Length: 130
Image 1 (tube, helix red, strand yellow):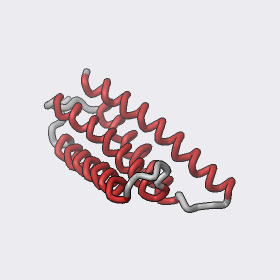
Image 2 (cartoon, helix red, strand yellow; image 1 turned 45 degrees about the vertical axis):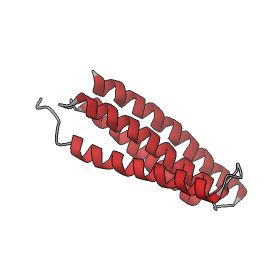
Image 3 (cartoon, helix red, strand yellow; image 1 turned 90 degrees about the vertical axis):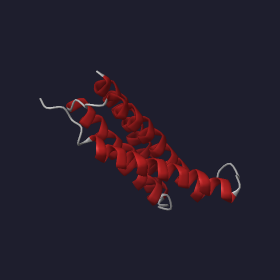
C-alpha cells in the first residue's frame, strides 16, 4: 500500500530529525550557548513531531487518492528540510552564501512546508471508510 510505504519513510525521516534536534540540544546544554534554540525547536517540532505524525496517519488510514499521499510526503520532506536547513543557514551562514540566496532558501522551504500542511488538511477528508 502506498500509505504504508510513505508512512514508514516519513517515520524514518522524522527519526533522523529527532536525532539531529536532540544532538543540537545536548550541544547547546554542554556549551551553555542557547543561540540555536529556534533551530533546535523547529527541527524537533516540524522535522520530528509533524513528520512523525504524518507517518503514523498514513500508516493508520487508507487514503482515497494515492497520488495525494506521494505529493504530500515529498512536499513534507523537502519543506521540513528546507525550512530547518534554511533557518540554520540564515542564522549561521556557514558557507558564506549571499544574504539574498539564503533568505530565498529559507522562504522557499517554509512555503513548501506550508503547502504540505495545507495538502495534509485536505487529505484528511479523503480517507476511505473501514
